Length: 338
Image (cartoon, rainbow, N blue to C red):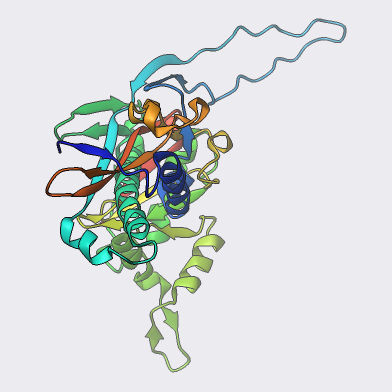
């Protein structure tokens, strides 16, 4: 929109960006960032080695007084991933501004609300891509900006249960354990978490094998906690239900069970070998008028602007460059159960 100027007399970009990043941290606690944590890079691309944090070669036995074997540096395949831009703009119209005139902090509160909506939209896109990456082993987009990054996951880790959970008589524990064994063999690591969408959770918990027998010969459906106890007794992790939703539907595809390492702090990318969600430097972050310190360029950025000509429409923009990446794709698996 023409004649837009920074609305920094109400909230400057540096302050609004700080609020946006705090909002991102709050939102990430309930997202798949617990498996692909947020991390920042001072660039618009990331370079890494597939499997660089994966298997470690075994040490060799040696005779007493003999020198240890010297291992050559083991290097994985070098990969460069470009980080795409993800942005959202929210409008504060003329009428809304007129209603806010004369109210204490009214404009600032409106900017905060618009910022939260914009940031949540960006976070939702990040989490939907995390779900896509964990389900398929690839980062893809088919919209106006097309990309496809294949992280090389073993095709056996994208599978369909031999019997779907739409049948109440199917042995849920047997199906989960069968895929767990495949996962642990390929990953060479213990399964840490099973994450399902709401539909898969409902079908899982309603299995006949979990029904509780009553003294009069009747039975009742097991409570969720009773099912969790049975799963743990069978050597499976507790089921986590991912409830993230947007206006277009659930973040995690219906009928999906993800097999993953244990969750970590969503801001601690060093705590997992699975991968991370990389946030790079947008051009917005480098704008001199934003007054963002150079060391804080990477990450989401937010700014409020207002037209100086009629109509005096205002807008709040959240801008970012980001993408979730699987550094060790075989530490993730997806089983279709519905």
